[in-house]
Image (cartoon, rainbow, N blue to C red; front, side, top):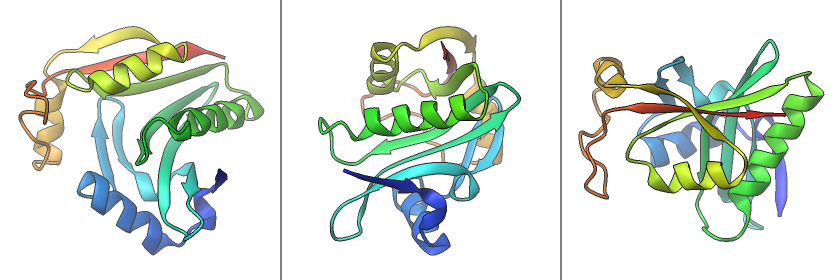
Length: 158
């Protein structure tokens, strides 16, 4: 598995990744509005150069916040490797805490992060309604049939 800094990728490759998988590079969550293609991060590339995994994050003080995580090939350790790489970068930057926000419908992510030591910290009721005012393309209902309404903050001490 080849993991590289996302800044080693072309701006176009980063933009296209987020447009393809998120609708745009813009991420709107309780902690702010982020341009994921401009953030620090890491990517996994296949031998043909295709991006198969991507993590973006921001560091503020002693906290690192994961803004996005994508693993396009499940059960191969890509997401885990990217989270570990981000945690290592955070430790090197002097961070003592990792955090992230996900939505109530994202059961896969909630399980994934809890298995890696992240704990529920805060619930932002109806936060997605606020996010939709900025990014109206956020769907009302997830593919699994769960209404997308709330955001959940997960935290892990490093």
